[in-house]
Length: 559
View 1 (cartoon, rainbow, N blue to C red):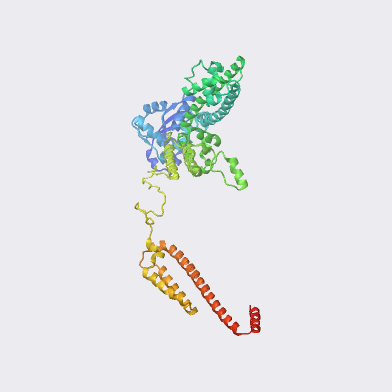
View 2: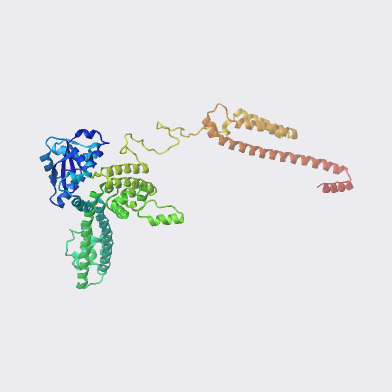
């Protein structure tokens, strides 16, 4: 068995003299207690020296990445003749086995053997002194650190931070310059501002046209559509603007050149930022877009710092002032910050933006960690999470939800709730209401009962006796109750529909009976008064005038 050992000076290949001692891992460290005992376990077979620092740096980076350099492959082919090779990294052993077809082994015994060789390295390798090995190790470590610093993901995202900051500054400057061009040229051709809304097309039109008098002769087909071009030429003829000198027009055209150059550079910077984001954070880019992802990284300081933040912090990044103001005044905290500009939050209804922002922040936190700490460089995770969030958005909107990404079972359709509709069928639980004639209480009287009422009322009118009037009232009440009573064999639906009408009819009957009783009482009272008057008149005829006066006085006192 051979042992591959990496040193700052080069690669060393040791021959294991006694493989039986590898079975006792606990006692293997004692064998390297002294140089003599170490020489009995291993022996140097070959050594490959690095020519310069760059070769040592290349070999070290390849070893860290678990791959083989060109010098290592050449060294192993020359010295490994069908023997098993012990390595310190299992991934490196797999790479050697795939490329060089050399059997490799990695276990606890090999690691203990590496530890013993490292302790006696200067004694096992002749010509390698401790005072020489220390500067080599220090120089190689510094070179390796600078190399990792130069190409580390933590430092590459600083370019994204600078690019998004410059992009925002360019937008502000471009808007300021474009508004200045509109205001300046508006003195000469004010109608052009309403005809051409886009700032870039406005600057191109001004640069091409110069004075409005030249508009009729020029061709704007490469810049503007036909309808806008025709409108521009008509407005140029009847424009109310003032005349401008050639020097003023020259300065305006130079400002238009500045606007166009800034717009062109902004487009190039956006393409650069898009490519960098797809390289550094592909999953975050697929989920929230290039600009929102770059602003999140810039706000967090770096991709690694952003990966340490939870989803709740990612949700409100950019709204810190509103958050602390809400906490101070004990009001509602903000629901979103920079994520408000993401397309998924923009598509959500106003009432659902908070829920969508919370879901998006949770998925964004996962994709940021995957981009910062994962090995894969594809955007599969970001696309998968975006599909899930789109399905959740459809669910929140109440639309039909099909099979969601990542779930095996389909979800049922969402239907509007209807209390009168059955669960399984399309029919209604309660039937449609129709007119029920059997619920009419007024029509319940028969012709015989009405005839009896007429016959009974006629003798009552002929002989109105006070005792009989009470009996008549009781009979009328019983008849009205019989008339208004609902038959017991009617169905429940008729009872429900006619119950209100029956009550109304009862009230009407009672009022009618009360009025008729009042009329009869008035008639009877009038007849009694007449009889009393006749009797008093007869008594007055018989009595003397003196007695009449006394009776009148008594009546007054009684009254």
